[in-house]
Length: 126
Image (tube, rainbow, N blue to C red; front, side, top):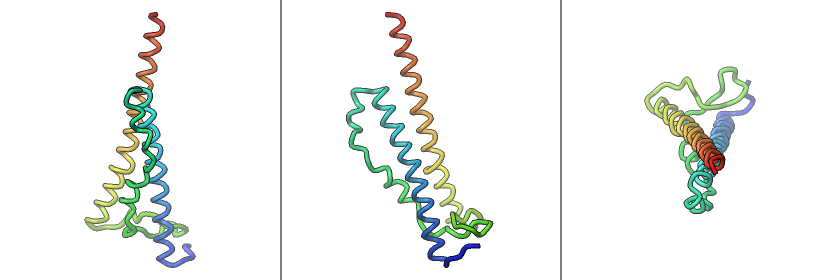
């Protein structure tokens, strides 16, 4: 069972969600910058200053919908929370903090692979 009070549970869950979202945001920014540098070298230098992928996740880590996990040993987002606000929060978290970053990462790497294949074909023809 969870050994601490609700405030520590909320802080624990908040930190877990924040650090997880920051990690995915960092990977998203990294893949996007790499894609720009590989696919568009002339414009890639414009993105050297990107260093704060933590602003976006911190906006979506409101500490209102956290609670103990089903087994009660840790705390996380209260997935079973009912209500319009909780549903919208979980939906926004899924779309903007998981689905869109994953799609952006996949598109970035697909564009890089496509650029490498096109470059390889151009070199073979010379």
